[in-house]
Image (cartoon, rainbow, N blue to C red; front, side, top):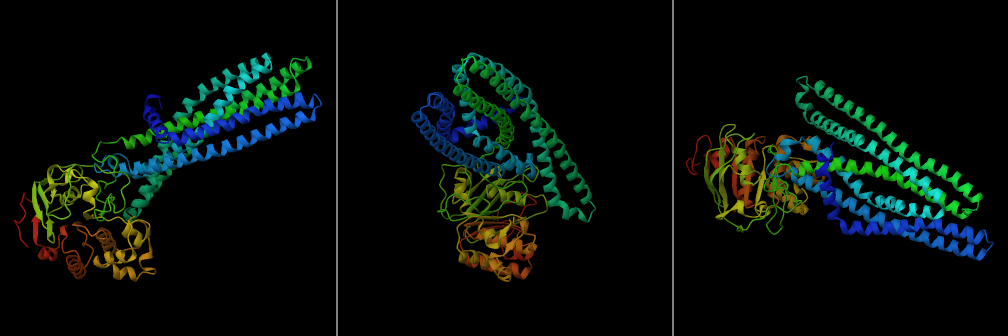
Length: 590
């Protein structure tokens, strides 16, 4: 990857450093103090040998030995504090980047999910985030390596001019090796990162689609696609490993040759009286330190370039699109997001029913606690960015049930997503209590509504975990929501009741059970407005009737807007809106 294409990654690394600069600067200073103590040790050993042992003075030798012990304590304290602080910053960086990626991937504009598949996003949230965090964790090593070079070169010069010449000859050779390997390594690392992303996508596709295509004989094709992607990863991994092996072996060998040359030069200087034995010992120690520092520096340059590549991939996601909620989590374009909100006093509920990760778009409008829901000439774009739906004017007062019906593609689900502020309207506004919802804080609106999509989401965890989705709710509150949604009966029949583990995507539950679980999730926050997208399609008519009766009895002030094709629900609705033609609320009364 060319330098210019890594510019977003470099900007991200600078931003990461700025966000943690206090902790990092403190850690780097502590590490520097410890390293300076480490670098001063050969000088003290030189004095102990020359002034103590050579002079036959045990007292001086003991004094210098105590000084070395004191420096050891400085090295210990500085290294421990520096490592602890930078590790803390690295962990915080990883958490922050994953949170921002999750929020951006769930943004209301759907730009990320349209551009990147889920496997690629998972790779960026794991492998690339870890690469950036590893760069943060290794910032102390930059301090150690650079301070070693700055201190050792002048120190060697004080010992003997010929030793400085040996060191000066070695340094350009190391620079040459650094110029040869880094660009090749960066390009290979980028190719490997892309291969990992493609394989992650193939794995996700294989796991999610295998059941659907098994009966069609398509499983073999998915397996072959995964095998090809895995083979590509192997090829690029081995290529990167070969390059890394050469890079890790050639540069460190140069200073080791310098040590051998220095021993020869220094030994001759000792024999001629130009250098003391203590000086030769100090030179050997310093050159060993320099060897280690240069070896680390080579690896650190590699680490930095990997972090730039990964940072660029992360920045691509964070900078994709430009939705109104670039820092928020919302639903994807596939209708799978859910809203199960808390009361407004529990600010910041996430649209999936948990807490939001970053502050949502703020507005200057204040939403009332109670009011009518009005869709004021509202239009939504149908799936795939198609033509907008005809303008719809609809009012749902507290306690009313309004049903939307229409053929496939008429925009029923799209309208509900716009009302939930998971998508932006093509035209018109949504009002609550007379206030434009689009001008209010998104979190305030989410705190007043519950939204259940056509394809509810079930995560790995217990039944109670799936109803709570991160919210604080007692067992009694969870059971209440389950009872209203008609889920309490089948849940209590499970081996551990509400603490029974369910498989990812609800593989251990039937379609009707998943729908009732999702409805309970939306009801947990006692919403003022409830948006239901055909959530009883897999439930028998009797159960559906009982759920609706409990809903209207327990939440008498909740306005319900439901999408349904069932005539039984139409018969119980206050109004039924037909979306096949432009209509005004009340044109068809139930």
